[in-house]
Image (cartoon, rainbow over all chains, first blue to last red; front, side, top):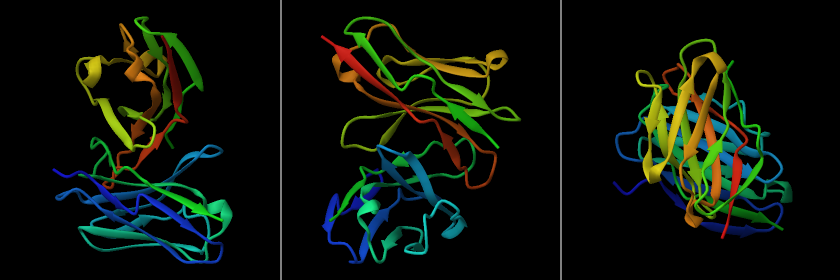
Length: 114
Length: 114
C-alpha cells in the first residue's frame, strides 16, 4: 500500500499562471477529497468525489478552481488563473466511502503564488 | 448538520506528563468519531476511531479516547507524552452518507516541553 500520492510536493508560480495539482488515491478506495489548509482558515474541504463523480463542490472558492477525476486512480485540482491568496497546502485524501471509513491523506502540495 | 469543536487551540505539556485534548461534537444520530494527528510537513494520520461498542478506544502511539454520549465528547488522552508527540491534532465526525464526508475541528497544537 503506497498510500495517497500527491505531486508535486512544492509548487512556486507567478500570479496569473495555471497550476495543476495531482493525486493518486489508494487502490480500491472509491471516495476522494481535496482539502486546503492555511493558518488563517485551517483545513477546508474543497470538493469530494464518490466513484469518480463529484458529489459536493460547495467548498470550491470560485470559478478559478476546478477538479476532475477521469478514473478511479487519478484526480487533478486546477487553479486558473492563480492568485497570491491561493497560497496554501493542498491535501488529497481517499477512503473506502461511508461514514465509518477514515480518510487517508497524502503529504500535500505546498503552493506558493507570487 | 454535524459540527466539531476543539476548545483548545494550543496546549503545552512537559515530557512525561499526561495529556488530554478535548473534542465536543454535535450530531443528530450516533456519530462516527475520529482523531487524526498531523506532524509538520505531513498529511493527517488516523490515530483512532469510534463507531460503537466499548466507549474507550485504543489507538496507535499509545493514545486512547473515550466517547461520552451524555457530554457529546470524545476526548483524546495519553498517560505519558513523548517529545515526538508534538504535532497538531484534529477531531472529526463522520457523516452518514455514501461518500463519507467528515467534518473536522479546527485542531489543537500540542507543544511538548523537555
